[in-house]
Picture 1 (cartoon, rainbow, N blue to C red):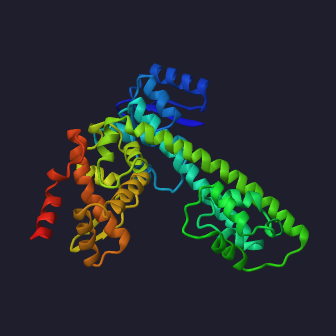
Picture 2: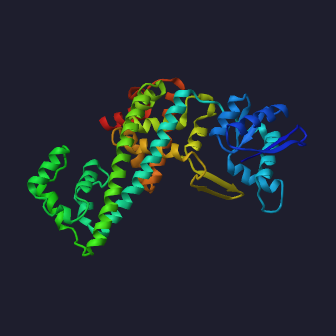
Picture 3: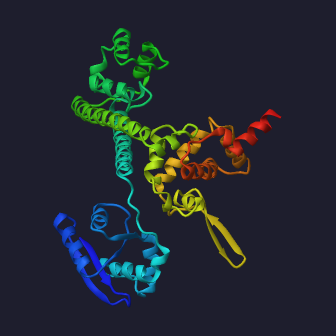
Length: 390
């Protein structure tokens, strides 16, 4: 259910109702809003089905961050109570009195919206893969640690297939060097360990004595988890291939891919949150704050402090810091910025955010000019190179 409140220019309530979150409810909501004369709609979330329905119905949607709503509640009531109906009125009145402070939602093109759906869906699947991999590892450690240690990554295709073939210690008793070599050859294993070394890791792990029934049941659970993970890993691979194709077909995607070690997936993660609407950000400082790579300053009288920025686009921060961390291995300028931050006593995450903030200045200019990154035009990089030559 969605709480709805429409007020006039004096703050008098003209409509107060609830709308169901389905096609009929959203269609009825649009009709009632038009009948009440509403034109601009304030809402706490910047995306979702209701936002799409309101934009398609011709309304101007103004997203207002939940932290702003929370900080504004004492302006309307002294008690700490909260209800959807009261928040709906608060949003409407906040738009009436402070509407000039908030930007209207600008709809992204269909290609960006599709890319965003792919990237966010992949991120959620990767989180699920990590959770299932940890669950499988914990299960194997409880009755067969060797299966969890024979290959480096338990969620790799070869490790999952090994567990599906040999879900219990008993099923792997006949695995010798020849069978292990054939198994590795079948999966085109490119690791640095020979079949004998893999067998040594398999049999050298701790042996846990359990009853036959418990071992059999845990083996069945390990088999089920391995099959689920194998399917999930394959779907992530397919979605990743789709993302790599989509980002390569976009002009803005090629701009972001031109940065050192940006890659395709990382560039897609940045573009999905950055979008294609240049007017969305007032300045590079606005973009840096949105990405969470600039601190928050508190100043009162003679007291001044700087703190970590919690309120930001966390997906964009993860993507831009990933690019920054990778870039220092391919760009002399990025390596110098990171090294200088570390020399000042910054810990690794802080130094990476400093580097990400520096990269955002370059990304901002490339994004506005619609031109790929050119190392020859990057003044900071050229200065570092000249210093190194001298």
